[in-house]
Length: 315
Image 1 (spheres, rainbow, N blue to C red):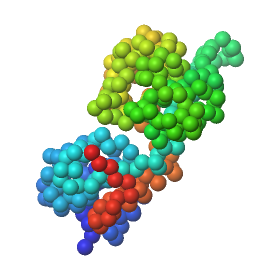
Image 2: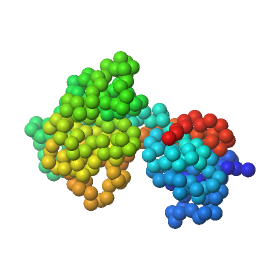
Image 3: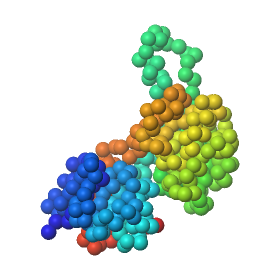
């Protein structure tokens, strides 16, 4: 008899096809599922950031495993899952390279005014080559501050070495092995913010990191600093971000994540020309998404079959 599985949103065929012959798959209906539908569910896939808490888990009394399509699980209450002996899996490591690439793509696009330049080149004012416009800042040889020296942070550091950057980092725990392997230097958060030309946020969203970067932290940054956020939108206080960018307190920001996500169409950040906002593309390569899909499926099937999850995460 096939397992009963529900997916929170419509995934690519690579996810649903992997369940064929093994699972009866339902997509979360637009009007919401009935109690009768949820009563049968044994496995749940979060494709996106649907909130999964104890109240929803209790509506699925036969739920054995939740498999997240992605690394971040701040949308899943891990404590509630643990209390109910529900396993939770995610897709770590697979996303590290693509997310680090995105970090540098945003960093370079921001410091070299690529989006503004693209719009200018398409517009009516570009009639002659002008040496006096859109002067950006050098990345090569600059000081990079990485907030969060986890696996993605380390991949960012590896890329930064190719740019001959001086690399600072801040982490909850000092990583002497990374210092030895990658030539990075530990700093307190305040020291890192004050010394860095570029600051990348690569930390998870937790109670401790929620609004980690706010008005006080922005005031510590250099006037020409560039902030890049590929972590979670909630790591940055968006009111403080707007005030900082509007007043040109720092040069610019480039973010792949926002709070909320997406931003309301009338959000003031959308009117600024010194911020790049990407629609959460950190893992959006064909190869990475395929590997994520396979790990997501592997986690779910392992949990349904009573086996250890390839990538289990606990509270």
